[in-house]
Length: 128
Ligand SMILES: [Cu+2]
Image (tube, rainbow, N blue to C red):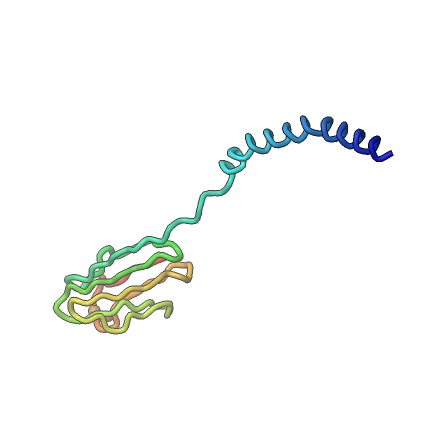
């Protein structure tokens, strides 16, 4: 009785073996195609630099992505700020020769200017 059961079981294993191998090969060959169909990995954050010189931001307009860092460097002989009109960011005073960095987190267009020189045209830009 026991011997008959073993025989039946062995036959079943032999019958199933090619099916298992076929499934294994199919999965093995299909894997690279599945990886190729995966979405691209997330974009790496970038650091952008804005030079403050001659009472102007350069570049005056900048497009950034969420997670990017923006660095303002003051090359003028007096302090400036980079202050968003909508309150999104405010560097406070950027002293002569110093810099300030901000990581963009809030989507949208954010105009900004220097609070020390509100009558001076030019130091205004936007970042998204
Ligand atoms: Cu200024």
